[in-house]
Amino acid sequence: MTGIELTDALKGFHRSFPTGVTIVSTSVDGSPFGLAVNAFCSVSLDPPMVMVCVKATSSTYDKLFSGDRLGVSILAHDQGQVVGVFSKPGIDKFAQVKWSAGETGAPLIDGASAQLEFRVTSRILAGTHAIFVGEVTHAGFSGTPPLIYVGEASSTGDS
Ligand SMILES: Cc1cc2nc3c(=O)[nH]c(=O)nc-3n(C[C@H](O)[C@H](O)[C@H](O)COP(=O)(O)O)c2cc1C
Image 1 (cartoon, rainbow, N blue to C red):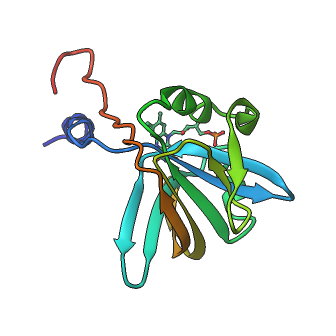
Image 2 (cartoon, rainbow, N blue to C red):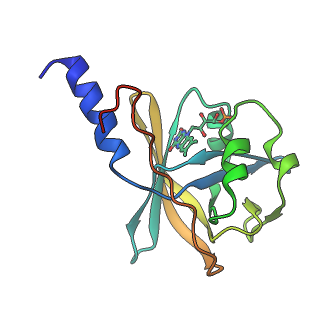
């Protein structure tokens, strides 16, 4: 298998894995920052740990290193427009949505399907990305069904 074949195969692999969409967020000097992330994963329930993976070229990347408290909002099925806002770089994203500060001060998206806050305990540099691992301090869910994201098939029609 050549490198190009592996890249195409990997894209197809990822398209085959439906996910939710989260907004990973933080507060820096009282100002909210965040981005759309589907690389969210539970690590363990006991201890309660989660992880998120963020690319270094994201304009939010440096903000996520400035403190140790991060928020994760799992978007609800009717919050597709929020994905559009939080997947564009360099804009005041939180000015365009309703949000509230969580218990730790992390900005959380109102109307989300579920929310949590965690304290970062490890930051692992992984090539073009960083993996933030941490201990969950607060969590809640609304019962509103989540938004489901499925990658689009490529223009060549393969899947
Ligand atoms: C559905 C979806 C999932 C995404 N998942 C991730 C992700 O897991 N990690 C990441 O770094 N970027 C992810 N992105 C891309 C960022 O949201 C996008 O690059 C955004 O512009 C980042 O904003 P910023 O540069 O202002 O931080 C995702 C985008 C979408 C639409």
